[in-house]
Image (cartoon, rainbow, N blue to C red; front, top):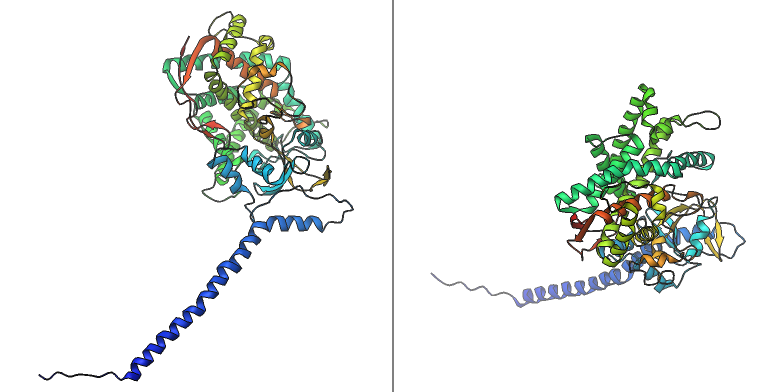
Length: 512
């Protein structure tokens, strides 16, 4: 067979070479376009997104007709829709340094406009107020800054927290008589203690307990008894589960979509409404039993306004849900933190034990009265210090009903006002060595406006005396009868939705 040789003309080789050169030239032409997009267009888009909320709300403010030279407080309002929620989560959830959220603003903007910064959080444009002076101003100006739960849909639009005007005054007066008057405190103290005593006895039998889980169960069982005369059982267990879910959605971004905390919280609320409505119907069918129960729900059902009208079912149910939200988790967390701080402060516990043994006659399980609590001077200092350091509510929500000027800065109408009380409680300017658990600091009162655990003004927490009394009684029974140790003394702290060690304060627990 003959070999066949094919010669490729030089011109064909040259053509291919030219085509390659052309492709390379086209590639070179394309590179500058992408570089221009990455280094030109993209930064502009990012900048617009970054300043979108500031431009949007700042422009709308400027467009309003005003003769004042006041301006918005310094700050940054973050991304469209999300605002500064990612920065908030970074400090609270990732770094676990919640006070640095405000510290970062102070480093960037100084002490702000009269102790205020502008932001966008939880779906709303907002003003953060962190100094005692502006917090006090807002709390004492209820007509300008009405109380505003972040997501009223969760607690109910007819609840005490959402009520305004005369309706709020009437509801507040009634509830205060039920939980804060001396006779009410005396009755509640005696009613709540048997469960406390029995729970602590069972803890000692177990030997090891997770304090938060157990005090939460104890707190809810007492609330169930006081509010709706309900004993422990499947219904109460369902309610505990639903209130836990509801509270997780209270500080979440209000996105009503399956899989989000807010969506789940709304489903929990629906279940709670159904349970309370069923209880209402049962009570209407057996009205004669109301005298023997004498609980909060019966009182709300019989309450009448000045015209003789009773509350609607919706008002009763929403008020019940709102009051449980206000009293359940905060009281459980306060008890948990008392256990935690006392375990880390043996000298404080010893001093506490000496005072309480003198009051209780050194008898485990002996009931005391609210009058006894008033005599327990050191115990009450421990209560105040526990509440200060626990910082159960990092901030208080208010709403700007009118445009207000404060020290040359505007608090716009329709914006939320976040009173960042947590920061004041941890500021060395107001509390010496603030991260040290020191009940003796309460030998003298706190500086004006610096201690706002229960808020202030006409919207201050209704159950403040009840919470203090119950915590003091719980501490009493702990101190006189038991000793305990933290199993994980260096456990990290979760700060959302409320602060608590990640292990829920796991302790070894036994009798003295």
